[in-house]
Image 1 (tube, rainbow, N blue to C red):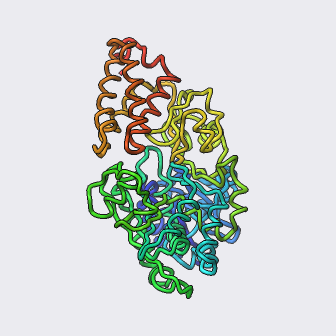
Image 2 (cartoon, helix red, strand yellow):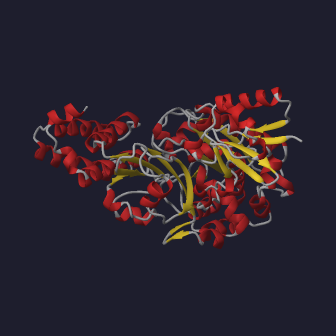
Length: 519
């Protein structure tokens, strides 16, 4: 009998030796004349256990990790091919509490199925949404997505259905679907995980969007630092095209939709939708003035739906199970689930998908297990490099769009970065300004010049030079950047700066000599 063994081909697993583990297991199986089939699946998101090896048995899949090549012989000796106990064993994968407590809708298949097998994808509920959408009128698909309450999972939180309705109503000989997979925020990796672990979900979601707005062509714009995700998407698109799930007359529906994967240019600003469109057109990635909105005049001047990976990937579940079922998750105006990414100084980093409304504290303490160092949590940044730094007293804030705005933060892409009590928030504030200065496209003065002046002013504050005067100057500068920047890069950079100044003022008041000594 052949035993099926799952070993992730996800970038995170590869970075800690998953390929070497796969080779060692294959070699040991040959040495013992044991028949095994190795499947390179996606990651389950439990990054502290990677490489995580799963064994398929008649009683379910058993997990072992983190596995090193030197552990392989002992695992065979212990009978891990039958799911027998070993110090690296975690029992049945579905019984692991960290996974069991989640509400995985978008990531239901990630780590479960073979990422490039359409048969496996369909066996786990794949293409149910597209099949249903093929029998629906475009307006009906749009209304279903609208009723679900889905909002942009890339950070803006704009209602997805409203964007789609605008493109559907636009008159044009060509419309486009564009996926923003330029995932550049610190502490985020959900887009990469999905493209590497379940790429057909993204393809299905984009095809549904094509049916909804009568677009026949789509592009996935993937950041240049994601070569594995890019290769996986290209292979998945080719497979879908080969089996008639992309191209002309999809699944006999009479509708056509095709996709291309494009590699980005390595600029953070291309995560802004209009800069991304400029880059896709072969131009320098610079922000466009709005209006016109991309929904009216987008790629090549045509009406364009542009959404994030997680927004498109939520749509197959919504169409397959209904808007009401999706809207049953969440709180207030934040409906559905959000794949949160736990990173930074954290014991159990990884991806957690839960209904919107869970608190920051529940995520970083109950799921994350606190800091990796064991020291107290001092600050948690939510929403990427432009997100606010939250102190202990705000960790019980629910993670929802309006709830985060109420405490002068933002949900962003769901990235959460944890810091222990050794962090210097003044230096983190300076980093925000420096990041903006480096990544600015340079088109508008508040962002281009303001971020540079912001760095200089923070340097003076930290050096103890005219602190009161420079604090006032920094406050004015942050307000100018917020009000005058052309896009969110300059407009949101003040958020981490102001939050650090508000919640951690003592870090800006240290004597310069003390700060230098601490370094």
